Image 1 (cartoon, rainbow, N blue to C red):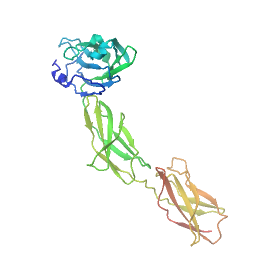
Image 2: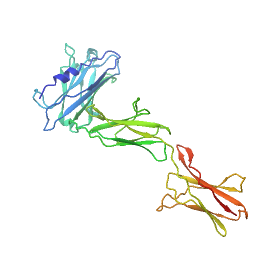
Image 3: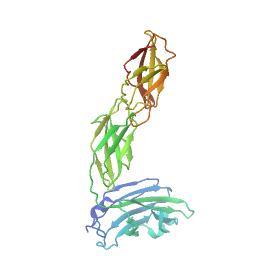
Image 4: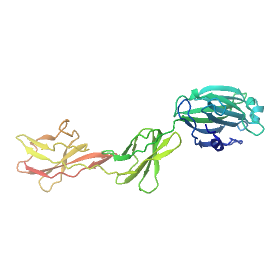
Length: 357
């Protein structure tokens, strides 16, 4: 196994000054030899939180060995040293892994050496990391004799197999009858989560509109009449990022069909038919006009529309003829409507159909 010389150059000694907050960025893993026949890699992140200006951990970093070629038992080694003030003040410490207590002790047992380095460690066997591609959290707390927390240092470590990454294609489609866009894409093997980006210009600035662990997301922050461009980034456990193609969609108001109405007189009734209306219409309004000079008046609204021949719904209405005046001309027309983000949207008027009373 190659020694981790390149990796350790990237791991700087954590030095925390009074009232300071220092974050260790992601350390990209080196390829290592197989452990129990499985090629493994790892990544580590650290974060130091200062609670008490008089006490803090000087060092608390990890080393990982997957075999014994370097003279170490395979496992994770958590190196510890504590600042002199912490030691003199009789502070204690606790180490937790995934909220389970691993070790408690006195900081004086882990005093930094003359060069400021940690020379004692806590050994965590690899058996504790049976689940791959999962982030394990190792946390160190210091505590004063009175029980007050001095500070904490969090180490996140993930063991994983080398990833074979596949790209995919993203598609965007307006949700029927709504001012909303649904994006869908194929699963990208090994991805921990997906970030979705949007722009109103193909080559413009893209803004992240959401993150998800699923392979679809809806964008409800769009305006009708605008064209939008999208792409998706997959984020992997090894900190790698893979982006999909760009796709676009134009958000339009729903287009409603023009109803075709028929009016039939019977001995005592008047029947108005509009038939099957298969689009996204929520209802239909019927208007009637008496004679030539009067205005159209709405005489009926129906929401129980028949959408196809296999579903129930109204295809017309029946009204009494007793209100019609003999010899008078009556004109009828209709239009459908729907709702688009709480706005009532109308379709075009049907052709006018006239009868005599």
